[in-house]
Length: 237
Image (cartoon, rainbow, N blue to C red; front, side, top):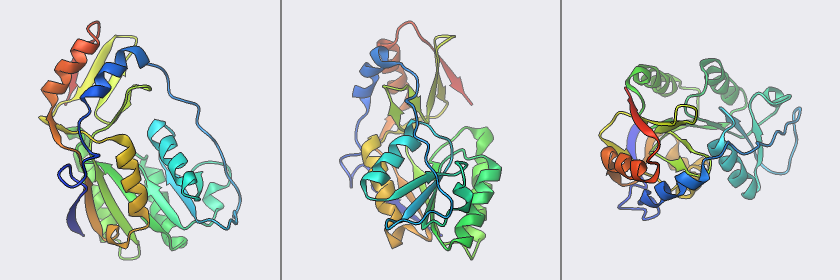
């Protein structure tokens, strides 16, 4: 596969900023929203079917709503009979468990479906080898019609959900990935580009980076400390 820088900040002004989200966190730290559960056996639909492989969380829930809005039939792997459903597209989310990841590859080939594999652009050092191995597995599979998206950093302040920080409510701490920069993405623009990529032939056979403009992590941490002065900060290697 070829590296293909896509929708970087200088090309897509929607992938900008993120500082304003910090101010929302102090008044909006709540739990995750309830997630919909749907499914069907060998489901037939006049609309294309997408199966999402990965955890149900604010990111995948919001992605599923956007796909539904585009007149797509959306299922989550692991729902009742989802593994027996004929589908046209697969989206495999970051940090998908190994067994489910392998199942996504196998079922995508059986269904001759287009598959988008999404990884975080950066991850903790202890996970780097695992991610590299997964990407290599995708690239080496000649039967798989797949694309790889490497996504930048995002934050849902209303749910305190992010791919580069975690909030420990009991300990009143914010745990950041230890890195020099974050590539902050507007979440709506990020999801729109993922959905566009699903239907773009140029996304397949390539690695595509969906990144926002770089922001120094320490600058972001400083803003977070001002917004949440009662929370201590920690860094995860």
